[in-house]
Picture (cartoon, rainbow, N blue to C red):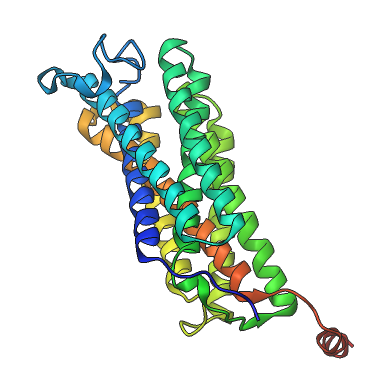
Length: 311
């Protein structure tokens, strides 16, 4: 019999809080990029020579407000990640989860350093890597939040055999495609290049989300561990993202965008980043659920039945 973790409400709540704070950090980071405020504060880790936490609130205006808020929020996420790691060590027996907690801690440290190097080295490549790692870090935290939930302790496997194998493969491919799409999105936002790759992967992501949702709705019900809410959420996010992507294209890459109010352009482009992050974590958690609640092993009896059907 499989041993289950002792569910800790505080551990789960901390994981969710850390993930939520990280999402807010990504949103603020999107505002920083959309307003071109990444270099509004020229020094790091200080802010105009001040200790980061002692910088006068009265001086936080314009781009400085966005960039300094991003730094403060990043510090909060770092503190929460440390707390999450300590809680995992204290409250959870699973060694692999402890390693994931350590990975999250290392990732948030690397993120802070990358953000600082973006300022001190004035190099957009650091900004691109910083944006991509932020998405992966957010997905990792959402995974930890699910691993520490009561849902993880269920042992339901209603989908088995070849169907389960296909679901696992399709969900994993979909998540990977979304992440690659986010990488090209970061390149496009910071350099203005690779629109072609961004559009290509947008098509591939849309196709795979449609196929995955259709297959899940055909084989699953709300009574199993996977349910229908997550795939429907992913499909809904896709629709919103396509509309935001169209708006961002016209706002940033066409002459028509010059007629847009600056606040509208910032809102559209930032929302595009935020929804992209939500798509990634929705697909990632859905993939984790599929791997958790399906049995991809094909027994001799199942294989024989399949052979009879094909004959």
